Amino acid sequence: MTKKIFVCLLMVSAFFVAKAEKIKVRLFSNNKIEAVYVSFDLGLYDLYANDTLLLEPGLGEGMTVEVKPVANGVSVAVNGYEYGDYRRVTLRATDTACIMCINPRGVKQRTYEGDLEVSSFDRSNLKIINDVEFETYLAGVVQSEIYGKKSDIFRIQATISRTWAMRNMNKHKGDGYNFCDYVHCQAYQNRCVRPDIMLGTMQSSGETIVDSDGKLIDTPFHSNSGGQTANSEDVWRAALPYLRSVQDTFSYRMRQSTWTKVIAREKWLNYFAKTHKLDVGDPRVRAELLGFEQNERKVKILGVPLTRVRTDFGLKSTFFTVVTDAASGDVVLKGRGYGHGVGLSQEGAIRMVELGIAYDSIIRHYYTGASIRHDDGVSERYVEHFVTEITKIIEEDRANPGKKKSKKDDWLGKLFRVRDRMDREEEYDPAKQEVEGDWKIEW
Ligand SMILES: [Zn+2]
Image (cartoon, rainbow, N blue to C red; front, top):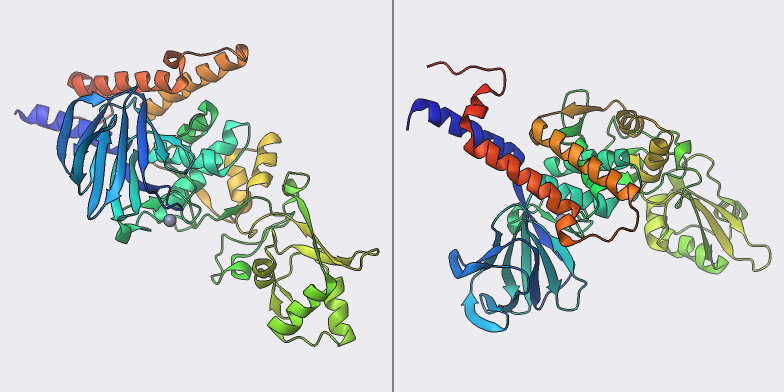
């Protein structure tokens, strides 16, 4: 191999690493899985038992793989034909345009891209792991974590979720994967099926949120702040300089802006008497418990942390005022917002996007003193192509609402074709690699 080719190959592999970094996510992590059926919506998959290819050619449309737990491993069958018991089975996508449908017994099915690895915890529970490109995972997370119409809101959520994921890559290291698909990590309930969400995620490629020292920040978020966010130390222990309470009128008049909960008067008073040893016979104590007010966020009610009251009564937030229902005498909690209140209010951010406020200003509104760092994520050329293609698809969809599409017209299929074409160019056209970029090879 000449030196020149070697350098070119290095460049190609560097491009690949940056673009196709893969992570492992455990799927259906909140369920016990006694059997799983996998079918194929797009592309071909190779089936491996342990690390040996089990059958050729690959599996595609019309075929179903069934995996069940057995002692020390799993049993596998294809279209009803039993192959045997193995430690682990893996389905590997043969190219980038592959989508599989995963249908565990008793749980709603979902679709995912990337590879799938199935092993077992014991005789009655499967461990299902999706080996997937980081950015593909992120688009799925954004789709699961936020609603909205404009791509900027997805860009914001993608930046937040990327920052969180990069800080927490080793969260499940001891379990053999990076993340679970549940809110314990970040919700990842399906592959991304919406072009506008994919667009926002691609636009955020390489973006993370950092503090004044350039370090990745903790990026908590919640549904709605109720009009004021909370200080981190008022909810958890650490006082972080970028998680300060801010006024947030953008969270008014959204889906989760207010809530009401009715509690029997005796139940409310007994709770404070028994659990927190307050003398509810004392008129001043009684008056405070029955007339507690929060125009601004408070942390405690008569020394009892509001976070504790929230947990014990299953309240949507700690931001509530207490009134008495004149007719029944019951206690009525009139609440604002939904969630812990720290960091970004998703509905506040949705409103800010609607008002035309720039996505980076929105992030800085909720994370005090933080800024956005732009790294090379996915190759710029790649993002540019994707954004152009997705924008075309979204515009076409808008121009032809209700138009029925064949599988070939699927927007993801189109994107895959663009990506494959670009992969081929990157792989097989070393001459092109040489002229790209502004550096020179010295011999
Ligand atoms: Zn987790």
